[in-house]
Image 1 (tube, chains in turn red, yellow):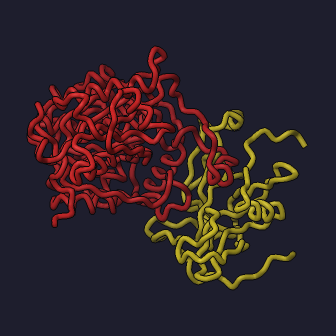
Image 2: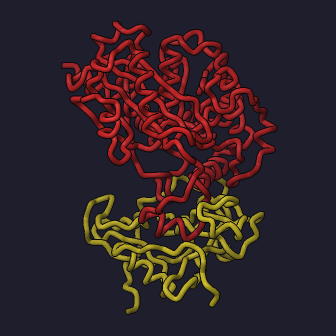
Amino acid sequence: MDKSLRGKGAIIGIGELRPMRRRPDRTGIGLAAEVAIEAIADAGLLKEDVDGLITELALGEPAALAEYLGIRPRWAHGVNMFGATAAIMVPLATMAVSTGMANNVVCVINTPAGDVLPGMGAPNTYQANYEFPYGPGVAQNSNYAMIAQRHMFEFGTTQEQLAKIAVDQRFNAQANPLAAFYGTPLTVDDVMNSRMVSDPLKLLECVMPTTGAAAMVITSADRAKAGPHPPVYLLGAGVSIEHGIPPAHAIKMVDTPVKFSARQAFQNAQLSPRDMDMLSLYDCYTITVAVSLEDAGFCKKGEVGDFASSMDFTYKGNLPLNTHGGQLSFGQSGLAGGFSHVIESARQMMGRAGDRQVEKLDFCFVNG
Amino acid sequence: MPEYTLPLPQPTILHQPMWDAFKQHRLVVQRCRACDMMFIFAREHCPRCWASDLEWYEVSGRGRLYTYTTVRQPMHPAFNELVPYVYAIVQLDEGPRLPSNLVNVPIEDVQVDMPLRVVWDDVTSEFTLPKFEPDPDGLPRRMPHQTGATRVHASGVPAYTPAPA
């Protein structure tokens, strides 16, 4: 028996809201319901067809959303894997539909609708005893800044090389009316001249928190072709966990577990990095994209600076990357931020990306 | 002593011995008696061999600057009046790395891999924070290709010497 997930499930419908700074007029669960309804309709399904539900693991979900929508899923799951939550929902839902636990699984993530400015939150015991007494920066700024600092020391990576990633992604966002920074192009000089937030990270290398929501419907291979859009099949997936938010005791701060998860995904898919026609890489900061490019095998460790300078990451380029703008230009709606990479990949694979459609597109790599 | 307004540690039973040692100006890390693994993220089990025979081990207090950032927008508003300041990760000579602050050095002189030594900041009668300053006796800063792979799983740990009671 073939135990891999290769080709056993597909994304057949998507729904996504435009990230906004605030939605004082809406509730978080209302946003979740809106995108879920949109994705189910997009898949050509009816309310009665949905028998699986995966949501973010906020307290009470997915039960609260099932109740709100008036559905009775026979399989449901809550998941929180930080920025990887949405990407992990794809193999999770495929596992459900390929084993008969459910036929059509809707996956939903939303943010609270109110104020999303980064707050402090209660520290966990690690933060309380090892980080907070020394004054780390807001959000994850200082952790990723320190990765960038170490990368620059070990490999001579420059700020301009990292800035190029933000600039190419912003170019892509100019063809995405849903992007928060649609209509606001960017140059390397703009990035370099932006305010330093946590050396060496500049403001325009960091995500902007927004409200938003996204959803997708995943179905089994035998049902996938019945929908109105070309199905987007899962070919391979991998997960790797080494530590929590990049702490001091990561084995090497310039390495990420992407090197293990990507290897497994490529092995499952029987494909290699050079087979990929576009990439959607998690981007809370420019350095996150840089180390993911290295660890997924698109360039060698330490060489991403030159790689970024020499490649064209725009949707017209030789390696389209974060064609929706990435979170850096699309906006980061909490855990739904990482969903934007999955949604954009599906949209492109379905051939529905409009002006920014990648022309030759057979295979896409997504990480979270 | 003026009132200390910055966030204080919140020890659990796991962390209390560490803060007690810091109060005595002893820099300690957790060490597995079974396999010599040393680490700072306090646990009840060794992450390498899963033994639960752990001790708090006093280290030399010398290390190198693994990486750092200059904080300009702190997580906690109490730090706002101190910006800009250096938030750092120090790699101890014994292997483990810990977050801290650099003191007694101008920001523009801070460089990755500079040698450091611990200094103690008695912030309240209850808590003392280990901070780090340039170590004039440390080996000079190395070029990146000389630093090699980071060794977290320290081997060749020096013999354990119990701290004075």
